[in-house]
Image (cartoon, rainbow, N blue to C red; front, side, top):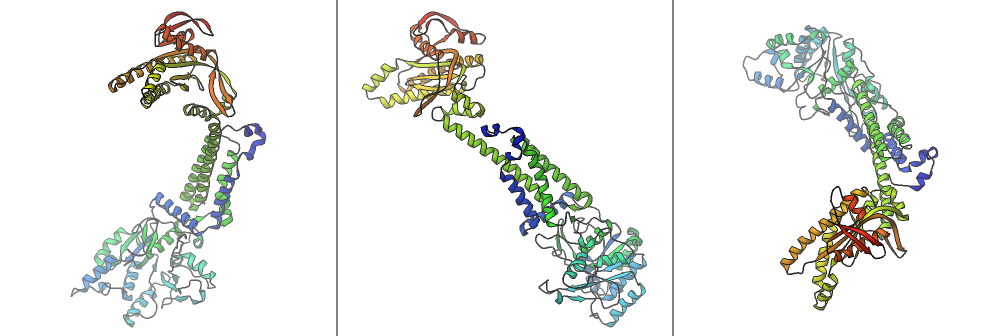
Amino acid sequence: MPWNHAAEAVPQSRAGLARLRPWPWLVVLAVSCLTALQVPLWQQAERGLDTQLQRWRGPRQPPQQLVLVEIDDATVQQGSWFAEQVDRPAWADGIGTLPWPRARYGDLIDRLLQAGAPAIAINVVFAGPSSKGRSDDQALAAVLRQWPGRLVLAAEMLEPQDIYAGSALTLVQPYHHQPSGLSNIVPPGPGQPARHPEHYGRRLLPAHGIKPWPSLGGQLLQQAGRSSRQPDADRWLNFYGPSGHFRHVSAWEVLDPGRWALLQKRVDWHRSLVLLGSVVGDGSGGFETPFGRLSGLELLATGVANSLDGSGLYPWPAAAWARGLLAALPALVVLVVASRRRGLAIRLLVTGSGLVLTVVVAVWTFQSAGVLLPVLGAALALLALSLVFGAEAYAGELAERRRLRRTFERYVAPDVVQAILADPRSADGLLQGKVLPVTVLFSDLKGFTQLTQRRTREGQIPLHLRQLNSYLGAMVEVISANGGTVDKFIGDCVMAVFGSPLSRGQQAEAIAAVRCAIAMAERLAQLNQSWARQGLEPLASGIGLATGEVAVGQIGSPQRLDFTVIGDTVNLAARLESLTRVVETPLLVDATTAALVASEIPMTSAGVHAIKGIGEREVFRR
């Protein structure tokens, strides 16, 4: 986090929640309102997450006591094949086309109940007389009378185009007096859950002024003497898997005596609740679920299975305002903790921990109890908080860096600014001035003044400047590579400092400075080779190094400031550079520098020399 004087001045006990700006609280409020208001797009996102949770969980085993007897494509194909045979069996008569003769349903019912099935629900509405004639109705009626209390027939509520026109709903009941249940299912629209079939008759119809009706599956359980383990009308369907995941058999296998004998060995009909219905053509239609499309019969079976094992889904809490508050709760806890922690890292750690814990709790409650918590709102609030925390920290850091950059860029080279900005806390101290131990380097070209005069007379100034700029650019690269800072250029002279504004240690800086001086001489030799090929005069330089304490800070006036170093060490380095011409060596260092680098770069004494303004000093060369 950026250095902030105002924040530092606030005592820890009084900072408290004031450290947080309004934005995090507004984010939590917005997410809470979205969860409570349940706008369409938000509902679709929540239902999408519920669907994804079921997919992540994967298929699960449905109750084994539920069996689907399906009038499927295989049954119709068998009927079509037998229809072309001269001696077709009676059980195959009419099963090749829909609707079936009612007598065939009677055959199925009779065979299943004789095998011991406790109850059968038929998802076919037998409304009005049979199109096959009176004898067809009589055949089915005889079977229904034979098995009282073991059958449930389907009723259907015909709906007008406007579902809210409740008085226009028409109930279509089976022609025979028999227990019946509604086969209607509330189709889930965008953002709506797949509700239990019982919801239609127990909740939707009474809302439109029509008396409640049980569902087909609910009546099946009642006829079999079973009870639901959940309040079905208020539950959402919890799907078991893709199409075909329930135990199912083709209707023709029940009708065919040979296949029926084999089928009785595979299925314990005495414990099987049977749902009988058609699934022909439902492969491309049906209802969309997390595991693909299911037929209407399988959707009814899902409702019955949920009732048997009590695994239906439901949102908690049910009240919209309560869900909004619960969605905001993890974020509020994170905000309270974050209000007492300044660092971005700890805030993000707390937020991330809250997000992980929220997701784990939501998945656990879904898996274990079918409870759907408002995890989308809670997760979104926590993610938004992490972005807000990061944005605030980033904005604060940028503001602080801009302040320092505006201050330093007036007089400091870009590389110095970067070094200072790497430690913003020490920037103000540097501006006010500090005493630091450094190694100062002065490098100057020998005979460059005379070369400048001659080229000026010859009109070769552009060529002269190109060569100088090439030299200075190369020297800057070498200095930067060795960790030094170019303080200034004085014509062809380069002044560099090692150890300011940041230091690696006095000895390390001295060694880096000497190595830099050696590398500068080597780089100049390479440049001379290149210039020779271009027909340009070679250049020679002298370098002086001195180590000691200097004053670091702002020098100048409000109109013109320099961030530089001053002191005897600077003067000594400049004098040593000039002395290289007298001693006739490219590099001279003072005794302090020679002592600091002796273990790595041995230096040789060049004698004691009188240095203007400083006195006699022993100097060293490589």
